[in-house]
Length: 452
Image 1: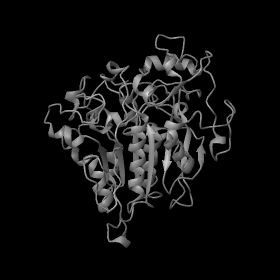
Image 2 (image 1 turned 60 degrees about the horizontal axis):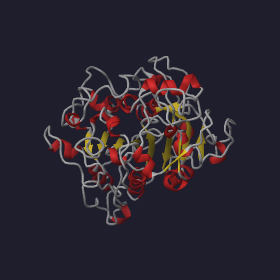
Image 3 (image 1 turned 45 degrees about the vertical axis):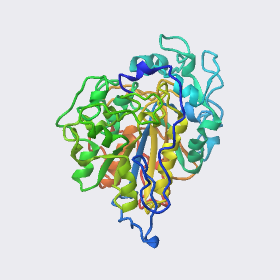
Image 4 (image 1 turned 180 degrees about the horizontal axis):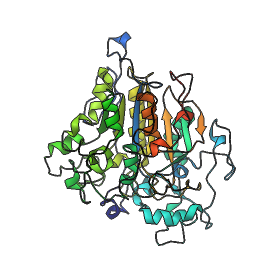
């Protein structure tokens, strides 16, 4: 994601240990990375307070890294390529990825080793040249950044946990990265629903920036979705794995965790503030981060103690984010996500929480569906499709949504759900994008969530 990441291409992958340990007593598991918790009033553990959302009580947004919809789900979907199905139940209602790309090349089969070995070029200029005005025909050949490794499908064995979650819950197949290019520029849409800078141009003025390689930048006088939620009396938190360690380092770069394959004192082994869009804004910068920043280990305590915020964002350390090319494995990222889902399911929040899992951007991988036109809001071009999974009791089980969405759609949903249905308050793409209601079960939400 950051400026360091292109320097790390071609390194071997090592399967990492599972992050989240399941808890069996209702207490947070031992170790700084555990977020497992159980609990219910019938067992004498924490009782969840009533939620404050209009349709959904609590929302957890998990942001993984750098894979397209086709890369993970192109061989799960079974409708003929180009058929544009209108049905919405199960893999027969979404288009399969093509057997070859437009150049005639066959796909690379993406397993943990291949994922760790190669990182496609995903700078904006490169992605736009590969997208080629919507022809999607230059990922393998035709530009300086084309590569046979850009056309890849995850193997059925390695991607099974995510495909199981899709089958049991809901998935969007027209969810696009909001801006072509690298991670930080796309992450900003999860906070302010508009373009702030291109690619990974800057790191925020925050703990961890000293261990990265991009210049620092902060922005003043701008409102984020966190400001709107807090201003309305809602609770909000970003749970970042490695946050406590980087703050305790006091402007130094701590040693890498023992299970980080690269053993580097930088990304992907350490907390990277460039993955947290809120830290770019002066009201949230600094080591305290105005109370919104918590180490990932705190999530276990909040699940077990009945203190889960209304809205939470969750970010794993880089080596559990699935980012290609830095020895990261897909398996380690899936374990992070599925353990989090298990932890919520074992807590008193089981029936009160919507988990949204997405990827910050497509990572330069091929996808066969053309992006929508450039947004008139900020005049920035869309990138490739991403998966978006809606998980939990609010999800419309088995659904494949074809509604056009992007990261700003999550912001719009948070406005609708927690701010009295008043969307577009950031006066950015949140005013024009579709909501996420097509993924949700109106029988389970208090009020039907709009799809538009």
